[in-house]
Length: 429
Ligand code: URA
Image (cartoon, rainbow, N blue to C red; front, side, top):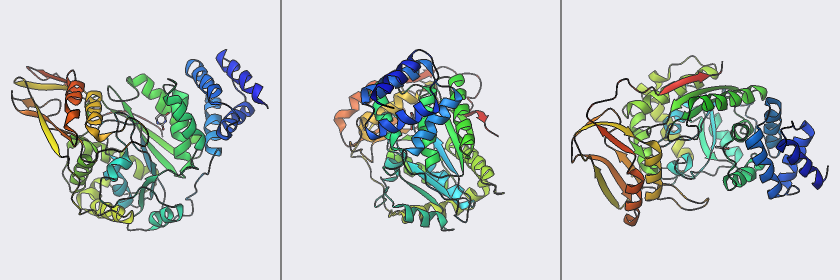
């Protein structure tokens, strides 16, 4: 095929046609090597946004992105491998307690993770707030940690050779308005997770105001597509659809979320974080074929022992004080009543503006920045009482954060009927 074939691939998809396996392999490979130009791939991505892809096309697209780099293989490890991926939410620190908990249950957790961009935080940014902790590990060291029965969990940065086609394509989609496509999102996520070499995978697909997917129907379709892609690639995959209308837990921000995760590992922590950690752990342990109740492993302190070992294995000091922001400011309730809404997107944007997130890849983050939530939806509040504490090293960021929160808080006279569910659906086997 030649450069002019890129045009026929674009026009085929533009006109609603189906791409052949050979066309998909060629265009993904050509894009990775630079033979297909960015503007051609942008046009094709936009055609896919509008026309979609069939199940066969999506599976082939995913396989081509995996084939653009190395696929890791952990089948020789003495323990089953299982990982979790979240589509991203505000205050979503679940990986931190979950990875050591599942390792303590007897599985190996090989998690290749990313840094945050925009309003959702990145797991690596959170862990990097622990003094000494390093995200970059060579594969032999990763394998050593996974095989160690007293550690068993690794959270590290994906190397450049893990699905490089996705890295290039995601950067292009980000600046061409072509992120919002179920086949493109599903193939992007699953190509990385399959290439990472996990034997089983639990997906936490977020739904609601603070998530990519605002409605349950679209989230179900994304989840089902990813579960099918996992099945096609021999990775046992289950998806939980979980609520992301309000932030998870009571903190959003890197070091603040580490501290909250350690509370969960110590047997405390917010009820929603504990419930979601245990729900995902149960799915992971079942997929790994282990007969252990993660609640027992959390309660008896074994998960905390694994956390400490996991942090030390990557150079971190689990006992070192965490960074704190230089300035704090309280945002107070303006009336008596019940907090009925605390919008995840507003809190995420405010935390980001305070310095917890980055606007561009490669920007630094402030480890101590973020938001502490003293009240969550359903809580009774009194006028003048602090609802939120804003943390930042750059106090000039506070007005922007307050503006992002302006329409994010609702206080009403009485609670709204019915408790909002955290786990909305499950897709898989
Ligand atoms: N996360 C990814 O890795 N890819 C997408 O396309 C969207 C979210």
